[in-house]
Length: 269
Image (cartoon, rainbow, N blue to C red; front, side, top):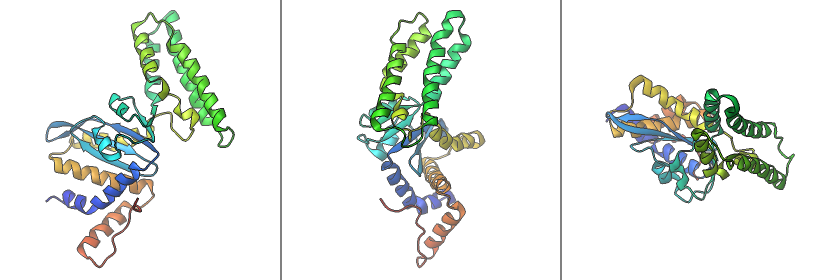
């Protein structure tokens, strides 16, 4: 057994508690990136909850990995980049990442000429205005009914924009995308605690991207499992301002001496 596998076994109780806390979190931000296990394609998944972050490296990109953790009937707020597999969580409130659609509109604007610049500019203006409103929101200044009315205004203006006929094929595609996910763009207007972008999950997945550049992935499935456990414990310690070195070293020592109390990373749920 490798040293990483040994630490994985000893940190497995912490990992299960992290999964429990993510499962009970009201918001979850999800993201994934490419990976390799023994030369075969795989995907590290990152799930960011209220105060905890869980990772899992899976052979599939689909949301099957997340469904095994939270269940198909999970009903919190799910922030993601628009990957279609997340649509299976029909009981959840979805928040699509506005950064992705803004980037897409800006790319269209760079190639547009004359009157064709109008549509991407309008898309950028609608979403940018909503983000500014959210950033300037002061807690307690609006009632739920007022925030709901404000969101309805953004919805109505976007609806008017995406239902107009478009001559440029790329604009038709973008308008169809905005229409297909119409109820998933302005969740953050009604609930300003929700982020308008998926930046939390993108930040969480960044260490995996760095690791991939250094050594490409894992040689075995056991190593991938161990890496998911270790990354989850390390990142959750960081978010809770706990010393990773102290927690891991204390955990390892308690396995060598059963008289020592095991350190508790998270309370049981």
